[in-house]
Amino acid sequence: LFRSYENNQYTSARINTKNKKDFAYGKIEARIKVPHGGGTWPAFWMLGYGSWPTCGEIDIVECVGNSPYMASHAVHTRQKNGLKGNNWNNKQTLSNLQDEWHVFGVEWLETYLLGCDMLRFYVDDVYSGTITSSNNSTFEDWPFTADRPEFIIINMALGGTMGGTINDDIFNDPQNNPVIMYVDWVRVYQKKM
Image (tube, rainbow, N blue to C red; front, side, top):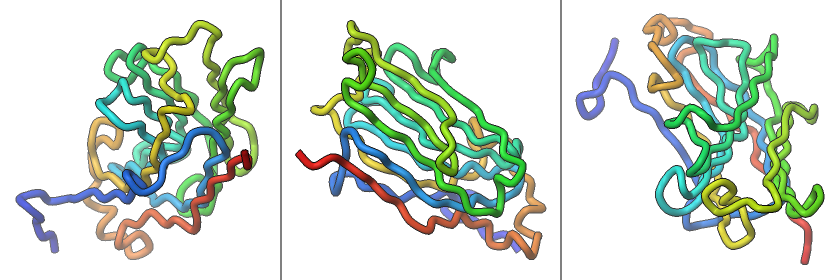
C-alpha cells in the first residue's frame, strides 16, 4: 500500500547540525548500517555555509543501493565538483556493505604535509583515500579552512541523480521494511588549543 506525501510517492530525510554546531579540522566519524535495495542513497557528509559548490562539500561516505558493494568518498569545490564532472572521489568495494555496521570517517588535517591541509578517509579504521591542498590553493579550489567550518549532515535519500531508479520491491521485503539507515553514533575529535 503506497501513500503519497505532498504528491510524491517517496520522501527522503536528513538531520544536520547547521547553525547548531560546525567544525573545522579534526576526526569526524559515524557508525552506520545502510539499507539494501535499488534506489537507496544513504550519505554521511559535511557542507560549508553559502552557495554550493563554492562553500565546499566533504562526502565522508555515500552508498548506492543499485551498486550494493560500493562506498564512495568525494570532495566538491567551486573549481572541481560533480556538476563539472571533475571532483575528487574514491570508491571502496565492501562485500558486506549493506545491512551491517561500519564506521566511516575522515581526518581533516591542518598544515599536515609540507604546509598543506589534507582530508584522509577511512572505512572501519582502514585507510581508503587522501586529497591534499596545494601551497598555492585558493578558496575556489580548497575552501576547507579554519575560518570556514562545515556542518554535519546524515541523510537517507531515495532516487535522485546518484540513487538512481527505485526498485518498488524493496518496500515489500519483510527484512527491509521499512527501509532504514541506522546510525549508532557520530563522533568528532579535535585537538585542544
